Length: 361
Image 1 (cartoon, rainbow, N blue to C red):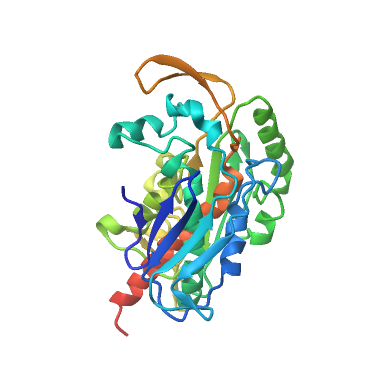
Image 2: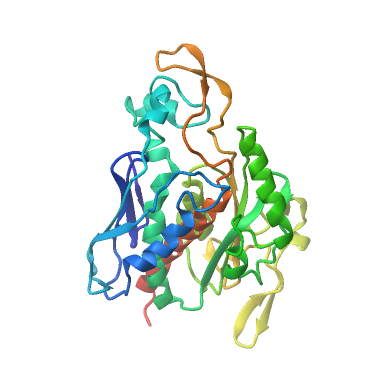
């Protein structure tokens, strides 16, 4: 089962949602990067369960332990292993799922592919797997700070169901996003989004939405032609996140409604820098960053586990019904924001290291 992402800065995540723990092994991190468990914990706290009354109530501190690769507060250049122990497992909540496939989950496909699965929880398909990604990204962020110190990566909730936020990607700040439990940057959308999540949860239902992400001050030249285009790798990174169903960069699908004359981004000179007058390309042209803000959106489906009876089949291939059990998010969007940021950081760190490797001064 492939669980590795990246080429030069490579991560391998491991662990199941209700096993002993989850974590990540990072290979290819340069030496002498200052990092601590406390710094990693800041990002893990943003994605952990139980952080507000609109997310899953599972009580996990998600406390990280650095097992290797760091000494006296600096990376050694050797593999870095980070562990987060599971503390609040309740596998008994999933007993019925041992013999019944949850609709729109990976239960059936994992069984069909491997002939065996961790039925207590989502196993490797659970969003708990993303702990390793977020922990690794905290390290990658420190590497990027050395290579591109002015670069800033910010994600926020753009919409939940039909409630759309009005956010300017050029002026959005981390403080705006983190000022509310939804993690949107439009103050007028906060309460309607919170109420919608609470309403659907009370009904035993769920909702999805869109996370938008901007990369400010990205250097020119990240990404490679053909198969390793920056937008192609970003798409792979984002669609590897649980519950994702769509990815678009720049003008995205709306760009199909424009003509070439309307869609093209004219070039102009700003002192010694090549700029574009508009940014429908989303900061990427020919698969390579052009120095403008990189802008993309990721669609998340409604949470698959809902607390009402649904038609399904059993492992013995008989028609039956199943009602959701356990503790789940009615909407994954608020906790998806730091995961989108993490996968963006990992992608850009890997590509920035590659760019440094191929350019001779």
